[in-house]
Length: 625
Image 1 (cartoon, rainbow, N blue to C red):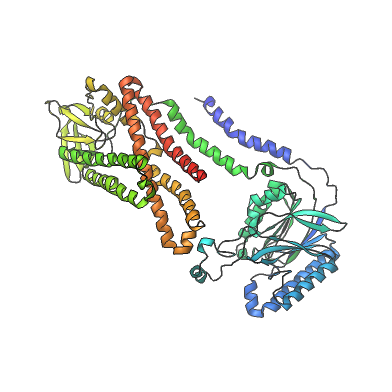
Image 2: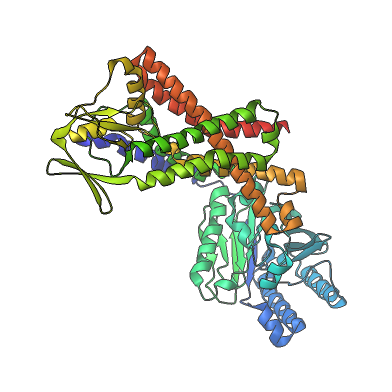
């Protein structure tokens, strides 16, 4: 259709970038000068790495002495020659708990650091450890001259398997397998600390340690708490042989400034230390693996709140919502567009060739399975409550009455599967070495089954007046008739039955109606919160059964909950299926020409009841308890 056809999608595609570009032009307008002079800070990148190896080679005392001497010397240069307002050291540069010494030697080192800061006359921020009754923390110490330790920030986002083990894996056995796994405790979240510089000025700063700077939520929380500056400390020594990883880490950290419009000082042990402007630009920085001092000036002010600060980390959620909406468009169009008209049909890839005895046995087994599901559902709903409280009894009954007959039906029908083809004016049905040929000229009509047992299908009426001795089970007998070029035989007195069968055959099935989604994924999603509630009520925590009886008992318990929800969803689906079939038949009796539309809406309502009603019921039960 030319340009007119592509104009609308091109315009829609341009809306998002244009809106973002317009917002960027407004947000990145030059800000007025800050009321106070810029904050000048010195970043000490010592290029000292692999403390553990150095400890083994030289001893702990010699290593700590070397680390402090190098940092003292570089900090002296920053204070005396560069006239900085504050000094920033990297993560865990002081590898023991500052302010809470564990020995007399530790107390002497603490005193030496305090005396050095007093002599410098500017505040220092450096990585160290903190501890309390719960354990140790990776922390940042804020120390001011003459005042001493003002406070600690405790790292919030710890690396799993290196800095800590997840609670569900923190067992003696796993500790033996992973001897290097740490035992640090996580901090409580973002914290704004005062940086007291000369002139009695307090600058509210947000400290972030290593992995913290990959979490937009921490930066946003700090901005909301009134921070005017971000101080980032990291130890990127594990990227020593792969500088690209350290560069990526710095790029991610710069996004915290872009999102909040807070300038940032970032120091690492040997990676990329940098002075980062509020728009994410790197004003000054280092190379990988060098010992150097970075000096930078950044204006400090209360920034205008960005959309990220106002709305939170909304971009990913908005994009995900847009993608979900685009994915649902075809479904909505199918719902609104109604049922497609008849189109030429090809033979199905497979169908079932059922002798009368096989159809009778399979139909009886399936009737027992589906009827048994309705009976169990009725007993659970209107009985004495025993099935609702006894999960094992429900599962045994469900297995005996529903699963075993259904499995037997599946095995029987699998033996009867054949591949249909048309060749030389004949319908050829092939299974392995077996082959059945039917001349098309001998077929007078295709007669759909009134009762879909063991499933929908049709019989072939021959021109001799007899019915071909095997039935053909397939979803759409009308499509088979079109492919064979034969008419469909419908008896006028049974018009409602035929209308219902045609609706069942020609209405395109929803993807949500697939057994994998309906009977496996949906029960799994329902079982997970229900199992967690059970764990907290029965054992006091989400992993209580695991801690008490081990992983085998925990997984067995979850398997039982999942199986129980599978049974529950099957029972609900059986009841809904009965309502849908009865409603379609009633519509076919009253208004046959509207039967297809009625069935389409009944199918949609049935899926909504299953996928929305069951979670809503579970939520109401949880809130009521």
